[in-house]
Amino acid sequence: MSERHVVIIGGGLAGLSAGCYARASGLRTTIVEHNLALGGVCTAWPRGPYTIDGCIQWLTGGTFAPLYEELGVVPPVQLHVLKEWTAYRDARSGRTLHVTRDLDTLAADLKAIAPEDSVEIGRIVAGARGVAELQQPLDLQRSLWEHLTEVWQLREEVGTILHFRKPLGLYVREHLRSEPLRRILTTLLAPELPTLFMLLVLGYLERGHLSRPIGGTTAFRDALVGSYQRLGGEARLHATVDEVLVDGHEARGVRLSDGSFLLADAVISTSSMPETVLRLLGGRYATEEMRSRIAHGRTVPPMVMASFGVAQPLSDLPSLLVIDRVDPFEIGDMVNDTLRLRICNDDTCFAPAGHTVVQAMLGSSYDWWATRGARYSTEKDAAGEIALSQIARQIPAVAGAVRMVDVATPLTFWTSARSWRGAYEGWMPTGEMFLGPSRKTLPNLHRFFLAGQWVEAGGSVPTSILSGRQAVQTLCTELGVHFAAPWTSSIGRA
Image (cartoon, rainbow, N blue to C red; front, side, top):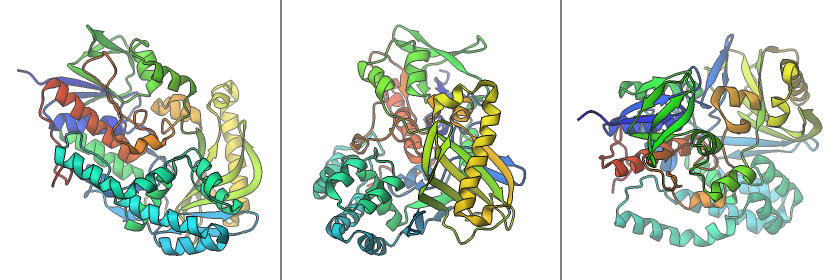
């Protein structure tokens, strides 16, 4: 009997992860990727002697760490544990807050800013430590004992989960009295994010579970691509899927934009939900909940990413820096009053010695960029000039030292990675994201599976990889195939 064939739509992290697990489970795989290379939005690109890192600002370990081992990414790629997650600077007062692994010092600094909120600040730190102890369910094939252990583990954190489950913007209005503290928290993280996400970041930071791959996104992506290739996975690059072939409510392959067909025993789509259910499946299997989410759901806001190669080391600056309350400025049709900067000064892979890449992540709309027409390139140049002038005001050493400029817009994310409407991380996460695995199938459609950051709200590296793993577990159950991991890890061990 020949190997069963699985077609995977999309060669980003979820697609590569699914490909690796499917190959380890004895299935033949073909990834169909729109771009010229595998990786999706997990990408980086050269600009002269500089490297523009387009993805991993920080990597979540802890309960997710075994995934990187299973996929053969770690230990070949070494991880640099973060001592500081980010820093917040108020441009008007000059006040700077460093969010480091020392949560007791962070609590003292926050209490100095907002003494009236001392009790709630203490609850935030205690909640962060408690949430960081919880184990995210990674394996769908858990035993009854593992399910009971998980429920027992949650018993002590029920109060924390209920108190902090609401969106951050609502939480700060209801539980904090200090306006400066409210501003700090909802600037560091989007107000729409569940407050539990903030606790998880702080708790993981203290435990040493936040890191960056040495060698940047390039090293991480290339290691995962290498794993897929070593496992014998196939890929079709610069190829676009136009339709999922369905026969008798079973997925049987795909039709490509060049008119060719790839027949398969199952299909996994890591494309966006609108692309998958409306275009590739013609809306035939879209539920009302899906249609409502596509019409009204909130995605991660699109952005312009302006990167500059600077002939300065900037070694005295934190690698992530949020500068709040700057003089308002426009990027496209959107007003910004915050500079979100990545200072790539902690890894020699980004720039020559004595140089640094500085990136600004600035809010902008997809529609505005998609309708620029012949002025698109001119507007990109203008956005770069505006971003640079704002950075130079806050970091004077940048002025006159720029040697390279690169600007990516929301339209860039669409054309290069098919990120729907420029939403590079899919849907905004909600409190429900902490309640367990998401649905990986569509009603009444067999041998078709969903994975990726449009399935797991909030995107991110670990959730995308986990989504690919769980999609293959579901596929193996439906096909009656034994699920196996490429390499061993601690997942599922007693």
